[in-house]
Image (cartoon, rainbow, N blue to C red; front, side):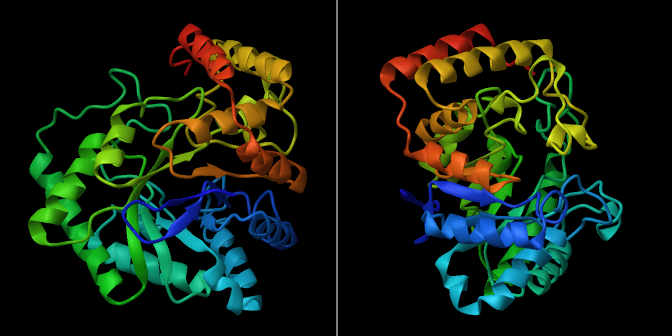
Length: 350
């Protein structure tokens, strides 16, 4: 396993980050225990969760993933130091979480306390803002006309961010979190957090977690360039496009028990004729190379300049072994060129 610094922190994190959002819905405590043990054996030391999980999000599944992780930690207290633990505060819009309210400094403190109790730990290494209060171009909203930002709310947004920064500072001062990061945000959002933090002597973000895959490359090179020069970690989520790049949903297939067979708040916006065509080409290339389609997608993501650690997830040990093994694969210049050729034929497929 290879490791990178988590932004400008002294923390070394594995190039593989184990996402946990299926634990508590698709996976049991026993499943999670096995995944944690196997990941640690393979050198994975970075685990990502959120108060909103398990998914699909609901009042019934809220907090269940953190509870599962906390159960493991309670049974293995001496092993807490073996990994970097990341969690997230949910943004607005979910009525069962703080009545769907915005992220505020006070709500950060409430959410951190709740996560610490469920996780049964004293400190969260990386605490992330799951999505910003303003609408951002995430979850398929990245095409012209899908969001509006010309509403002269700059001062209001900046005041919100300053309040959030002050809440994060209080959590850091209390020893409840070590660092914080952003998620589902833009270069302007990153810049505003950094600028206000520098102006007011508050902590700067050390990472950002955005959707990034062969099908979704809106962050290249703009967000990754900013991360490089601002010494922030770039953490791609959904590198398999919610499993689509495995090829299992091709030609209208919908295997039972999979992500796409469950309810989706935002709909199956990744399932388009153009996505299907792109996935078919990537699947064919993977077969030509002699690796699985999932391994092609993950190996490619791992080799993108500026990527710090790629967040994977698995509902079975077979999937987990396959996915972690992808990070031992080095795609050749010719194979990368073939991937770029496919990408140029299928620009922004969803």
